[in-house]
Length: 412
Ligand SMILES: Cc1ncc(COP(=O)(O)O)c(C=O)c1O
Image (cartoon, rainbow, N blue to C red; front, side):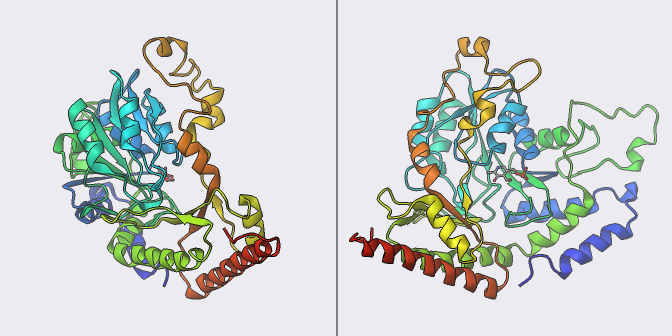
C-alpha cells in the first residue's frame, strides 16, 4: 500500500493545470472542505496552512484574548500551549488521567478560575479524551471547548467522531499525521457564527469570504471602492497544491486510517508479551485511531527507558520516540521572556489572578508517566518493513526477560 498514490498526483496536476488563475480561486480547497466536513459529521470545515494556526484561529474565534486562561493538558505537542500564548492568553495545565494519559476532567475542575475562557483537550496519540464531563464543565461555566485532534482522525467517543463534540475541532496534515499534505490543518464546527469568524481570521479579515467560500475572486475586487477587510485577520489559508493532496488523502481516509489501526494491533500483539509494558488504556466506548502506538514502562520494569531503546536500535530497530517533555517544563516556560514586551504571565498578570507556577510538581501524574512512554510509529506501508520491526521487538523483549531471569528476577 502506498501512502501517496495516483489520486494525490492526479489532483496536484489538476491544480497545476489551472495556472493558479484567481478566477478559479479555491476550487480544490472548497472540495476538500466539503469532503472533510462530511467525514467529521460537521457542517463546516475551514482549511488552514497547519495545525497550529488552526488552534490560534479557533481560540480567537472563541473570543480568547489577553488575560484569559485556557485549560490544556501538559502532555502534548507544544502547539497546544503555544497557540494559547499566540492568542495572548495563558495556558493552565491540568493533570492527566493515569490510564488514558488524556486530560482528566477532575483535574480540569481544579484549574477553573474567573479568567478561564476555554478548554482545549487533546486526543492524545489518537484517543479521544473523556468528552462528556468536559462538555458539562464547559456548559456550566459558559466556556468554549476546542478539540485538538491533530493526532486523531476518525477516532470515536461514545459513537461520535473526533471533531464533532466540542464547539470546534482542529486537525493537522503535517507529514507524520494520519492524513497528510506535508503541512496543513483544518478547523471543523457545527456553529455557523464560529465558522465565519474562523474563516475571516484565517483569510486576512476579508469581507468577501464566507463559511463555505475560501478565497476572494477577481470579480470581488474589480471596483476601486471595494471594501475588502472587515476584521484583523492572518493569512492562514491552505495552498491549493496542499489542498489537492489533502483532498486525495481525505477520500482515502478509511484506507489510510485502517492501516494505522492494523499496524497498532500488530505492535500490540508483540508488545503485550512484555508484562512490564503497559499500553494506553482504551475505554470500551472509544475507538482509538492510533497515530502512534504507545506503551508505558511499568514502575518495576527490569529494564530502563534508554536501555530498551538502545537494545532495539542496536538490533536494527527503528528509533523509538519519546513523549514530548511536559510543556510547562520546556525552557520557554521556565525562563521567558516570550515576547519583546515580556511574557504574558509575568508578575503583573500573576497578581491579577493567574494561579499556576510553571515548575515541577504541577501535574504529578503526567510527570510520573511522561519519562516512561515509548511511542512506536504506525506508519508502515509495507508489510515487510512492519514484520521486520515486529520480529526485532520480539527479540528485545526476549533478551530483557532472559537477562532478568538469569539474575533471578520474576520477569516483571
Ligand atoms: C496535538 C497536536 N497539536 C497540534 C499540532 C500542530 O500541528 P502542525 O504541526 O500542523 O502545526 C500537532 C502536531 O504537529 C499535535 O500533535
